[in-house]
Length: 310
Ligand code: HEM
Ligand SMILES: CC(C)=CCC/C(C)=C/CC/C(C)=C/COP(=O)(O)OP(=O)(O)O
Image (cartoon, rainbow, N blue to C red):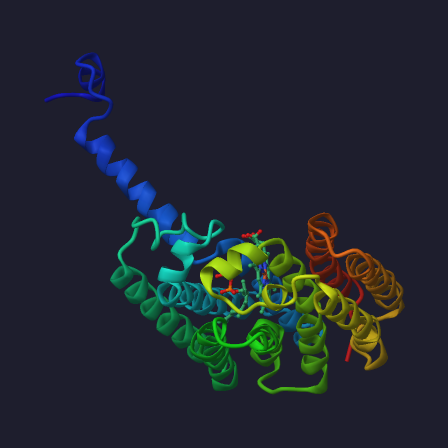
């Protein structure tokens, strides 16, 4: 039998077994890209915050894990379906042309099958391990993202305001999983993530405005070449986020350490948003994008560090 060494001696790069392994690894990596694992990780951090705050100090580690697993699967399925629907436009954009579908690493049918299977399994896990409110919310999030936001991207600049709704539902999913209901506290978390997204994606959409135009997507910077509206909107939503970020402390969900930290973070994010507004450039946009990646994990951490008992 030919070993890897003998194949190498003959000048062949890989044995059939090694080729099969490399293929399998390549396909696994393609599915991981399809699932947008980095975005899913931050989404799951918002789910975890909602769950832990809803549980109010009582520990349910296995329910938390199953909630994260189920929601992560639904989010991955949604990302796969988003890429299935956008495969032709993704090919036109530099940022997305290398994705598994436009680059041909996966067939469209494979992405659709994966997206459907993993999302259904995720909803089933949530329905069995938590409650029907949680499973229903996850399904609603999927539908809003895949069936409403995604088709609206080439149609109207309002697409992102609509996309921000499913983007902000994950902490509500976590809260519902822990409590079985929807409370004002869950909507406070929703509001924070909802408002946070505007500076986040407006900065990104500015950086990639030419790419979005090539792909035919109506993101605000595509129709706002001097960036006046883009900058103003980013700053306005960041301003609204300052008081919204304090809500958890005013409704008895988090304590004074949270209050002080959330105020500092709100001012931090507002500063980068106002700088972006004052000079809409790729550099100020990149700095604002970076600030968005600091703000959300930091405020979630503060919530978890300083929760208040019921
Ligand atoms: C309408 C809402 C949103 C839009 C349009 C949007 C858009 C984007 C885009 C285009 C990127 C890629 C940037 C790049 O390649 O340089 C990105 C990155 C990212 N987004 Fe968002 N986003 C939204 C909401 C969210 C939400 C709700 C979360 C999580 C809670 C999130 C987390 C992330 C993370 C972690 C990254 C960096 C990961 C990576 O580059 O792979 N985003 N976003
Ligand atoms: C449970 C569940 C379904 C969770 C999903 C949460 C959700 C909707 C997150 C939105 C995150 C995101 C990257 C939006 C941008 O999508 P895009 O399609 O505009 O980004 P792209 O241009 O990179 O494809």
